[in-house]
Length: 74
Image 1 (cartoon, rainbow, N blue to C red):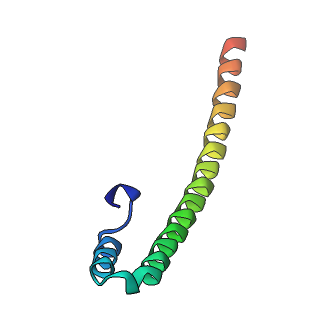
Image 2: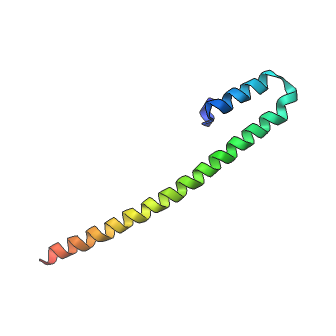
Image 3: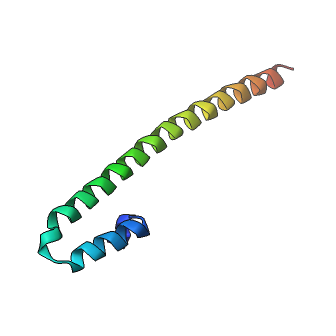
């Protein structure tokens, strides 16, 4: 479970529920489902951030190429 990237609070809650027995199976599943959604949200945020960075980098590359071409002509 630790390798799943869950926050320590979620791990503690999961273990506590697990120790309470089979009557907490549904609660454990809900906890895992919620954590999965949180991770998907983070992935989506990171994808958007990556796209913005890629556009910035492309802009820098275009500007550098223009300047390099200008230097070659001089």
